[in-house]
Image 1 (cartoon, rainbow, N blue to C red):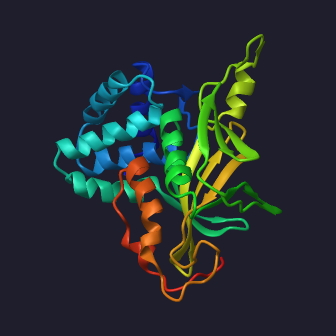
Image 2 (cartoon, rainbow, N blue to C red):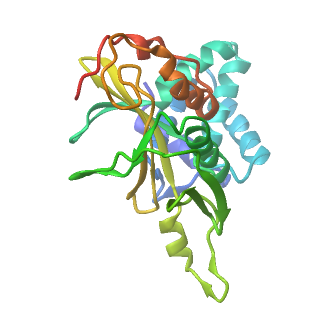
Image 3 (cartoon, one colour):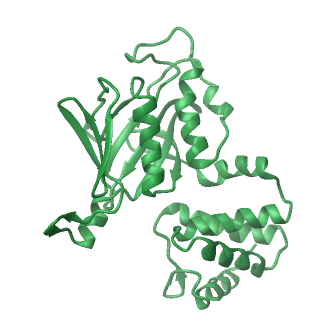
Length: 285
């Protein structure tokens, strides 16, 4: 097991090269998954019996390849390259491991046993997710913020119009619409917004999630949050136990997991999961 001194040495090497954000000699993590990614790399290098420089060189290559990619996404890309180069698994096996390492289970207050799949937050990735849900699956989804004390389950009356302006995606219906800040936002001509306000308004975290009851998934969703962790939107995805009117089905309709499977494939490069098809009926957490 790597001791604290060895960990500090590895951090110091990367920090000295300018290849790792630190504060007071310790790594800086903006999100919990970043800390898990760090620990996963340390443990993997150790268990494979490799020198730390094997990982370091691949990290430098990934940072050089895409300098605008979030730091710890490059970290994970470097770790995957290390594993593939050393033939510890193949691409198919890596997809399975990626799901287990990137996701995590948590007991959400008021939400129950929930598995979270963080997704990369770029304008393109968030726009793609929203396009899939609102342009392809609009008859089958329910959407709106879900917070303690308030649950919105809106239903689209028809396929919406989707437009972008100043970083805001507008999902437009006849007589009403939804604005979501997912891209670069500068404000109206002559009325620019501050950098801090732009950061606060923009989506900075998004995830896929599934809720378990007695270790079986019963609900599937997409959620997005702004720069101060306020929820912007939840989309309740088509449920195999419920029809579009939220009535119980006599038998599960697994074809209704196609939206979930498509989002997992496009956003996380994950194959359909047999775990999603273990249930027999809808149950509230």
